[in-house]
Length: 178
Image (tube, rainbow, N blue to C red):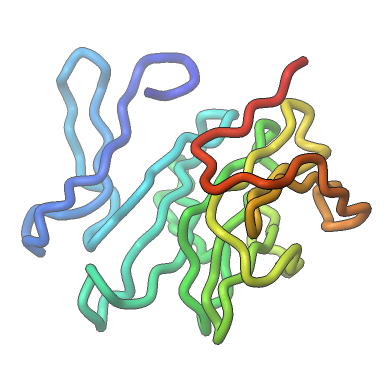
């Protein structure tokens, strides 16, 4: 649901090239349109309501096993811009509350957590060999993430990493309190 509640974005994951893709529809069910064709995953609204951030499987490989990349789609211009590096698979992104950055997981030999601006600026590697659970603080200044049975916190550029909890077997949720 868009930030102002008037539109819904969704991914049609049919694995049928004629229908799969990123769609937009009015909240009243009218005006459905396909914005981007292809295997799309995890669409999220940018907080300003002018863009959609999503993962797309590489068009030249099997969408269930191939590379994924993260894009920003500008609703005004209709242009999708690659946000993450083209030479690595990037997935499981988490958009910061202020919409300026996102974290994502990539696999370039080893699983790593990185952060990049939603404008596609140069990514910064935050940690290597981690799981996928990571969460932004409400002010977008800090990240918490789960690695090897522990919870860590660091600033949004990977500085000041501190272990705050350990001896966890699994983690479903980290929540920030105001």
